[in-house]
Length: 259
Image (cartoon, rainbow, N blue to C red):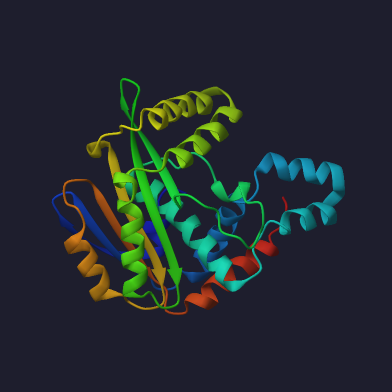
């Protein structure tokens, strides 16, 4: 469903040369529809369809469901953080024109621990073996603070604004494991990681926030101060009942049939 965010959300857009700020809220009467779609998308960030088929074949329905549920976070803070990264990856693909080539949360070593490295890395092809890269920071909270926005911006600017070599190598290795076209993309990313010289004009930054508060002034300030010599996306989704929304999504994920 390539227009999911356009259907679920009502958004305004502000631009300043290479910078774009989107502010979005839920469209009228779209919550139920959004939850139905989001539970499916959220599960896909933790487990692949072919893994589900293997679990069903090996363990039967109840056993497979139990194994899959062990991947989902239990604590509200970790659930909120994971959902922020999931929505960030999904909106980058729909609104920003980048591919997020792996679902990073499938590789967590513990359900209630955050993974290190960039929250999301997006990839685009500019031809001649060169890639566009998107480095994203995702924040999810009932109340977003100025300090959190500043910390996210510092994370984007770290390492000369590039994704770390470690994060890129990790991404490349997962893609190479997949084989085929994914492996070829992985090799390109591996080359970029080793060269450590991806130029600024091929790196985009994205600050994604989903919060209960409107966060107007702090994001206006970030938009004004963000480096205008590179492409910048600042995306804010306001869900006033943020905690309830997160709970609804994960309740749905836990109860989603394995069809």
